[in-house]
Length: 276
Ligand SMILES: [Zn+2]
Ligand SMILES: [Zn+2]
Image (tube, rainbow, N blue to C red; front, side):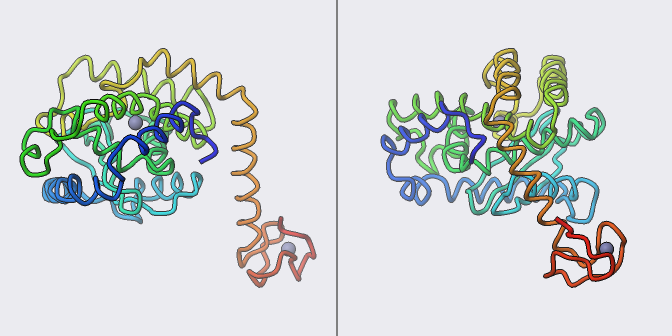
C-alpha cells in the first residue's frame, strides 16, 4: 500500500523473517481462535447490512482504499467506545462498539472505519490478530491454540511492529477523511471517552483498539500532520481522485448532460464530451 508507514513495513518484513512462516501460524494458532471469535461476535452483535448507512460508509471507505476484500462489519454492544479488526487478509472482520454510534459524528465514524480498513489494506490482519491475542494475555484461547508457545523474540517483534502499524492505519484514515482535523478529533474523542469508562471485558475488551495500548496519541497526530504535508500523501490522494474520475466516466449516464451513454464509451453521444 502506498500509504504504509516505513517503520511498519520494515518491522513487518522482519517479523515475517523471524516468525514461523505465516502459513504455519495461521494453520496452528489462529484459525481456531478466529473462528471462535467470529462465532462469539456474530452471536451477540448486529451484522451491518450493505444497504444501511453504515454499510454505505464501509463500502465508500473500502472503495477509496482499494480494498481487495470487503470485511463483514458488526456493531457490538460489548466493546464500549472502541473498535477493532481481526481475521485474515482475505477474510477480515471489523467490529464497532455500539456506543460509538451515539457519540461520533459521521466524519469521525468514517475516519474510524477507514482506520480499521487501513489495517486490512496494509496486510496487517494475520500478525495484528496474533498480536492482539497476545496482548490480551491469551485467556481462553491459550490452551486451545498454543499462543504462549510463541518465543519471546517473536512476541517482542510483534508488539513493536503493532505500534508502527497504527501509523499506517491512521494514514488510511486521513486519506479517506481528507483532513487531519477529522482524524484528530476522532483520536482525541476516543481517548477521552476511554479514560472515562473502563470498557469491555475478556477477549473483546482487550482486543479493542484504536487507542488502547497504541502509540501515544500526540505522536500519532504529529506523524499525521507530517504525512499530510508530504509528497507521499499528495501522490496517494491524486491516485484516488484519478481513479474516481475514470470510474465516473464508465457509467451509463453522461455526467454533463445526463443523457444515456454506453458505459464502455468515454464520450457522450448526445453532448459529445469526454466523461473523464
Ligand atoms: Zn488500529
Ligand atoms: Zn453528455
